[in-house]
Length: 232
Image 1 (cartoon, rainbow, N blue to C red):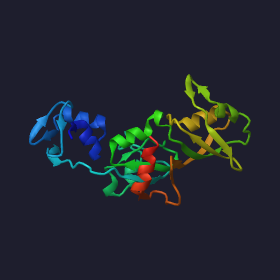
Image 2 (cartoon, rainbow, N blue to C red):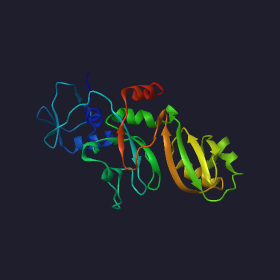
Image 3 (spheres, rainbow, N blue to C red):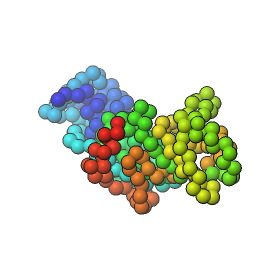
């Protein structure tokens, strides 16, 4: 089966779809020895695709990993401000993996990584409605405003869907969302009078962080991956 060259490169884990298109238009991609300068080009398993002379291997099987993201790390390949990224924490054999969504600089916990760019895209689509659960430690203990978040709230013109919020003792809340908008938990809880001091993600869909150590990575079983994909 043939696929677009940019998708082939993205699925290989070498670059994002947009990054692949930039590599192509800059003349760094060859197929069977010929330079390709347009992303409107199809390849199949018999073609030899190279980037800067290095062969790009297609992936036969989707892989998914749990990574316990440390605090003060950026979910990006490179940070223009020189801050530490998740890839600075990963062993070399995992540096080609793509992150599934993002956790902000201060947020810790479960971050999924994959070799499958299309799977990463599907898992983060708002229409997928995959629940993500966080433990939020907030300033203050007046939770009277949280019902606004439970009903759904608009902040600075952006509408946020209802959240499931449970009080779990002290200044801690268990918060479950399904949209995954940028900084959603922090923005909504601040608007409800409960600014977040610490934020830690403990689950994504049917996948839980468990007791994986900070900065550690674990490959998920094919059964777990299949169960997650069935929810899409």
